[in-house]
Length: 138
Image 1: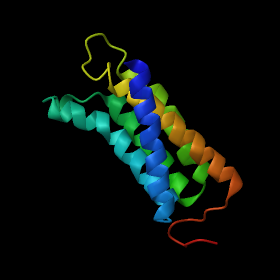
Image 2: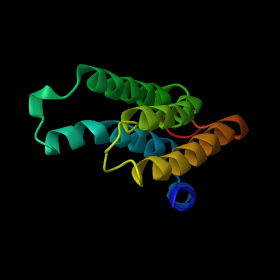
Image 3: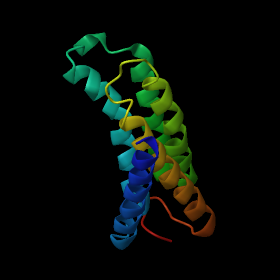
C-alpha cells in the first residue's frame, strides 16, 4: 500500500500543477499550499485536544515553512520548491512514532506529493522567470 499512496500523492501533485498553470498563478498557489501544509500538523494537534500544549518545536518548524514560503513568494520561486522538498523530511520525522494513525497513508502520500511538486517547482524556477506576485509578471 505504501507505493500506492506515493503514486496517489505524485498524481495529485501533477493535477495541482496543471490547475496552477491553467490559472496562471503558480507561484502564489504553491506558496500558499506550502503554508497550509506547514499548519497541518499544528492543526492536527489542536484538533486532538492538545491546545496550548502543541510542541514549540512543531510551531517553530511551522514558522520556518511559512517564512520560506513568504520569501519564496517575493524573492525566489526556487525557495518554495526547496520548502516542499524539505517538507518531506518533516513529514517523515513527524510521523515516525509507532502507532501514529497517519503513518500508513499520510507519509507516503506526502512523500509522493511533496517530492514531485518540489522537483517540478525547482525545474520551473530554472526554466522561466516568475516575478513577485505583488508586482505581476515581467
